Image 1 (spheres, rainbow, N blue to C red):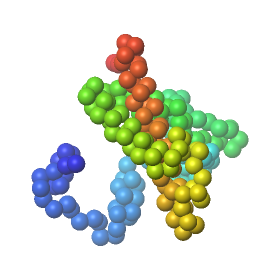
Image 2: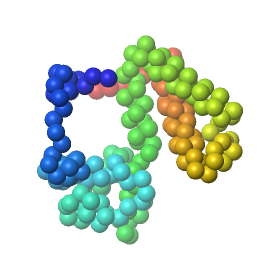
Image 3: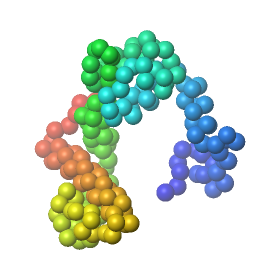
Image 4: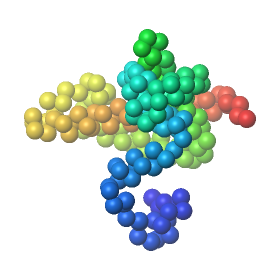
Length: 186
């Protein structure tokens, strides 16, 4: 799919070379140049496990008090959950991100929504046919691959779960539209 962000790729030119120090170093220096609240937010997006404020501060290259203040604000608006107070520990609020994704999907046109559902259901049907099962949890990877190839089956099963999750999200948006329930936006 062509880029549409005004980058050289969208104009048919060759993409720019990565920074001399490598992509990781370029990304790190870009993050370091951002304000502390944005750095803490970007770290918070990756808090899949309960994480102490001090670890967030270290990853966001800011003081512990700064990280605590911004994490508290993020907890107040539902982006993260405060897991404990002593020590201060936070993790990502998965229900917030689920809601945010559904809101983003609700902006899709009916045609785009239908096309995505059609593609995803066809992809799920391929998994069902490949593994002769209706659910990825019913598949024993060792029954479908030699020991050397079992990781490929695990990757397929993970992708199958992701496809099913995406179908559920799109179906929720479709059903919400059908019932006439829309979110009020300001």
